[in-house]
Length: 317
Length: 298
Image 1 (cartoon, each protein chain N blue to C red):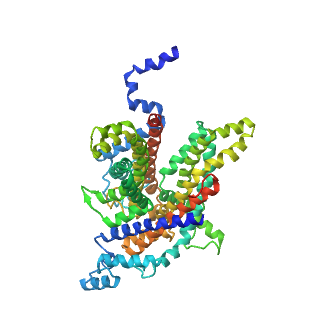
Image 2 (cartoon, chains in turn orange, blue):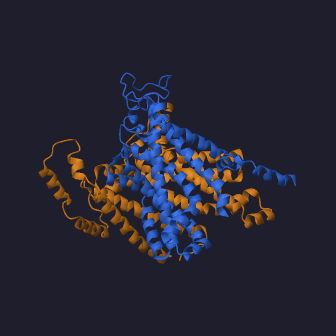
């Protein structure tokens, strides 16, 4: 197994290099750069001299290939460089905001699973009835409602019912779990609804498929209770494809949070990313894209490992 | 005997054989979705004639008015009529959603079919590139493209925004189409075409692509929904459609977040418009899949 994992990690290196090349050269085609965004941003008059000096300081006047080699050299040493806007190391900027985004992503995943597994199961068991129709409507609606709009509706609902909003400043969970959950549950619900919609459809269709298998018929013929069949025989196998979707969606949640964080005023990775895009902060964008890609690759690896634990037929190659 | 005569007799009624009628009869949910989409399409095309007010006209005497007989959906913080902005916003959403999804799905289909047809090294290289693009979250990729390209307006339509939404769609469609194309690739008519001496381009474009139309259509409707949603998200973030062009996502951003607590209608109606359009396209995609599936399996 160690060998399998190390092989997979080695295979990730070319992908990461590809991501690095694409992001780096994509960003450098950009007409404006951070110096213009920052110095001319307020409409202030800046002399060419000042702009040139700032470019030299950030190394933007050097040839692109030289900048690229520098950056890749840093990457190989696990150094993502410094933010062009704040001057702080990229890794510090990300670390400061990672906790909040990661926690919301986990909570949204949990909410998604808690809603989707029972709903998908019920829909499959009562296939073709009004229950099934209702669940399918819930799922299609979940894919249609933008999570940032749902977030706005939640904020409005909170103001109308209890008249206050959760505080804007972030409280870590180990300091005050209640304050923390009260603050983060709402964005998690806004994102989790979409998650549950995706998952409900998968659970429903894969359970329907499993229920048609021979071993389910055998179990019924043996006289196993229907509810044991569903729980022990069918659902366990039906949840395998769901694991893949849970993992992939979890990796993509980081993307989904980009907007929802804005609505709830959370200072997370999504907000940082949008900010750095607006500021043309190249090193920060590059660093974050690299981290997103690495996270995605790692999540995929974990899914495959979990798969082997859940299904003994799957073997590492 | 009587049972068998019935479908035969039905077959002689010509309008029942019309695929559109057949679809509506077999997929009532799809028919409803189609109806909703026709309404949105109608609103988008004839916005000038349908909209009760000019969507760009500020009326400082009518700021943040609640829904009434004069302003059915109320007015925003500049006194602009929200219903009119939603109707014109339908045009923006459709132009950007349809064109980016169409371009993305078509490019993805060609790449996927070519990848499956050529196989070997070409397939390997294309698959690695697809893996690469898939390791960016959709919105992150779109944001990077928007940031890189800036705005490029042609007749008031931001071409770069269409590109930004289209590019993340390509690898996803290519992957699905490739797996369908792998099945077709070994069928005898492809071999026949090769023996007949047709060029590779001709085989991919004229023989493979038309036979992949079922998965293509299903993906197209699903990705139109995605594209409309992504356009709304980018506009909401201030990186998509620019003011003062009416766009649904844009109506939820900016000053909307300052006023929606006292004037909830300024966010409720645009959000409903986005959800309804995306809902209808998703529903249509689902119905289309159920309708095409039996044909597509055989």
